Amino acid sequence: MQKYQKRLVFSVLMSFFMCASAFAQYVWLDEKGIKQFSDIPPPKSVPNNRILKSPGKISQDAPPADSAAPAADADQAARPVTTASRNEDFNKRRAEQAAKDQKAAEEKRVASEKSKNCERARSYQRSLESGARIATADSNGERSYLSDDQRAKEVAETRRAVADCN
Image 1 (spheres, rainbow, N blue to C red):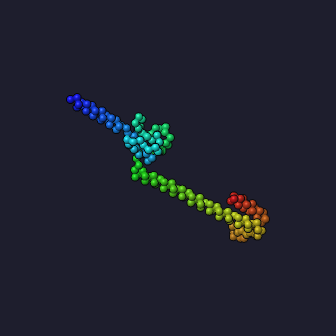
Image 2: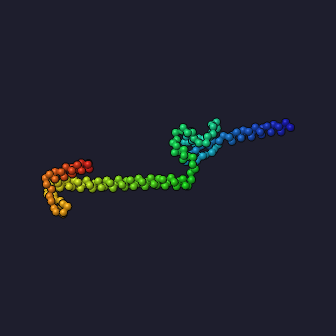
Image 3: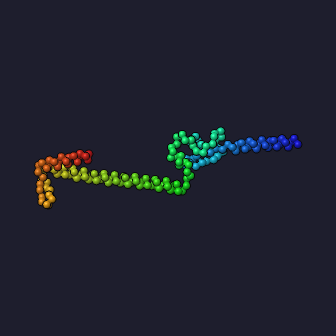
């Protein structure tokens, strides 16, 4: 009988030690925010604030609030990665890119118009400074020529416009 009691005690002790190793569980959030469960420690690339449970450490449902991870990252980690959330992220990135492209096209158009206006101003300045007679049409459609005072005013205004181009 003694022999069976020893085997029983031995079996109970062995099962206790085996069960103790089953409690050595690790839980951490990977880079996508998905919970990972394992009986081996997480990779070295996982920061300590993303490890939720380890032997000897109190279990947590989420990373500590005072961690260095931004709030947006915590929100991202809290929600599961689904096809809908991936589509939402994709559409958001696509809309941002479209806005950037539209802004770049608008800036290019404005720069092109400014370049054309500057070239026109330089051409007009050359005409004014050449000394040739410059004719204008009045409201009745009659042709009149610039006087010396009018020419001086036009030269001053054109120089200011050309100076803004540089």
